[in-house]
Length: 391
Image 1 (cartoon, rainbow, N blue to C red):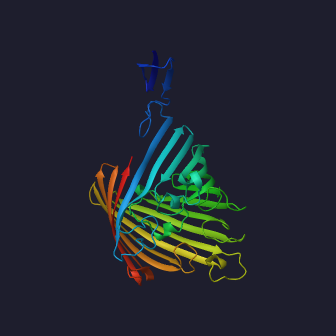
Image 2: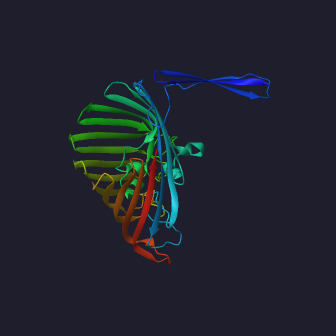
Image 3: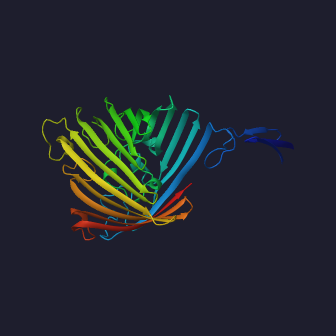
């Protein structure tokens, strides 16, 4: 009998510990394993602050919900929704795992998304890449200028894919029109405390690999006119033909999306938000084809208003009102003129880790929704409860 000796060296902060474990086995070998924990002791969250220039963060969330639709649709699906599509079903929506590494001027981020809605959130990615929500590198060229390359979340819109960052659980129609992410390179420049600018070159809307021989451009201007006010002017534009975002298959079909996001917090407990967007599509088709929405010029636009108030450290209540119109049906909802109201409660069930969100929502559009009997109806009312756990 020979002994297998495990030497485990743990380096944590200024403390080094040596553990020797003897284990007898029948194998006639002697093995020595040296296991070093580099960059201090790794835990959930930030690494030990003994080296403030070197940090590893690991975080994520689990998101699930139950929702009841009073139309009782036969297919058990809610119309016009993005992620909260299931009726009368306890549903796991998304699971996120995000790892970031920072060292002085350098940062690397890997942000993975799993679950039934992950394919939709990352729908331009295929095969094993479909789990990638973000994967990018950032380098700080100067205290004011940074460059980012890879796949990163879009700058467009008020709401985001990750449920913990949104007050309302269900997502707006503006969010559903996209984009969700871009793949490319961008530069962010902080002009001063009140003004920031961003410019980038990307493969296109929601696409890991370029789907044509054209690149699209992105831009953002950020303003802080007051300590309690933030305003962002966003733009994305380019020739998006042959992509997965529904903008046609002919070269020269240009798409521009102009987006405004504003936030105002007059009181620590009271918060307001605004999101307005206008999308313009110019087709390369010489003649309109009735069954193809992208065979003629089109426009879509919408406006969403947000207000939430913290009644206590545990409970907040928020209202979203929205209007969205896409007469030509160039986006995913078909030709619609939608109005919707969403009232959401936010309960901090355990510290800042576990949230319970009861919600009621009303959507209205002529003959857009379907009742259980198959008859079209103008309204859809849902009530639901979401559970969001962070780690």
